[in-house]
Amino acid sequence: MAASVSQQVGEERATRDDLAAAYRLIAFLGMDDGIYTHISARVPGADENFLINPFGLLFREVTASSLVKIDLEGKLLEPSDYEVNPAGFTIHSAIHAARPDALCVMHTHTIGGVAVSSLEDGLQPTNQWAFQFYDRVAYHEYEGLALDLDERARLVASLGPDKRCLILRNHGLLTIGRSVAEAFILMHNLERACRVQLAIQSSGQKVRGVPAEVCERTARQYERGGSSASQLDGIAREWKSFRRLLEAQIGSGYRQ
Image (cartoon, rainbow, N blue to C red; front, side, top):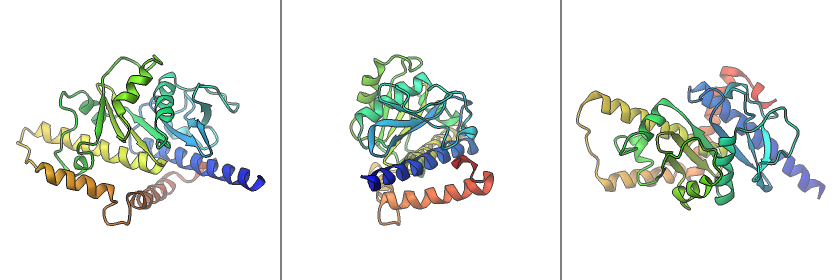
């Protein structure tokens, strides 16, 4: 039993490190929105509990130990000087409760993401980053600030049982991952796909179309991890490179 508890503590520590790194990377890449938006991660070995940012800290201030641990009812499980963003609780509790594969849920308000979420046709297959998400993005209609717990059921219905990317209409982007790494890589690519689409549209030039079968083939290549043995192997490799970038730029203080 002691070994099991020790292992669980170690796994939670690793999850906290990854989650804090994701917050810092989102800030470093300019994808944060002050103290708003949120990233959560399920606590290893405790499916009903998850970690999320302390409401009031900038993403660049988040550390592994400052993350708040709550359950699916919003109960604080460890002492903290901070509350949880109510909208963050609504969105993240809904997805963690409904999707066992959602080990990490990431939500952003970026210029590119909010802009594309506000377009009638949403994300279009105009570039290689966008092909990754071909027919793999769900949409959820805007209902105002996500403060109404009744919206959780509708949010989950919009996401569906297998989609990993959700565009919140007139609001922003959301990704879910089987790891913090996967949620981050999906978000990074989804944001870039949105920014490229906006650049293309602002050029006024005609978009060169790509056949649907090629778009689908590309999406499947991404799912297979490109040149790696699996998608998760490829994601793990890329995540390590982002962690190295982060530590080279800001050090390892986020692990505190």
